[in-house]
Image 1 (cartoon, rainbow, N blue to C red):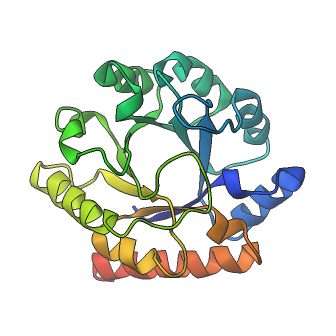
Image 2: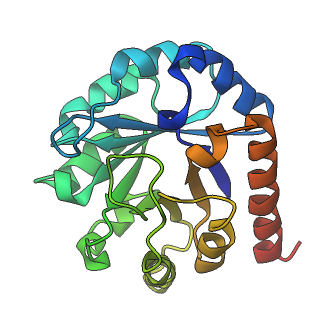
Length: 226
């Protein structure tokens, strides 16, 4: 599964509905929604009322990235707001297995997130519980950061790890510094879901979406031998 998941954090909130409609009309099927609490990460973003509000007019798949301490507290609320997938940080969960189990039992897809310095072996015992692994390719909390070059090897190592363990269908999402200059790098390393914030909402949004989707779909066709 190859998808572009634009980060709503980079949108203009004065015209949020208009911009979300624009990316959806131009082919986006996913929307990346960063929920920040000011504790796990320095910033505070938005919460359930915003997600519930945009759900009314938006048909995209809601990819909700919980950058909060103990995200398991919010599973029921996220379900009610219309989240389709909830991704939680290894570093933020005292009981990761229990949190992922709660997400799945609520009827949502589950993902696990690793910060740049967090080793891959922290997910060894939950790979059977996740639909996606999200690798942060910048340190979380701020948009517009530069991609950390060393993360390319980490993406490649994660793809091999999942394949070798018998989980080739688990997606790899990357978040941070993905743009026109780095998109080929992360795709070639094995990522298949790309979070793009500034690279989507900066400048000509419609053209940005079309250009990114073209590269993503070309890579998908190459991998599938189409």
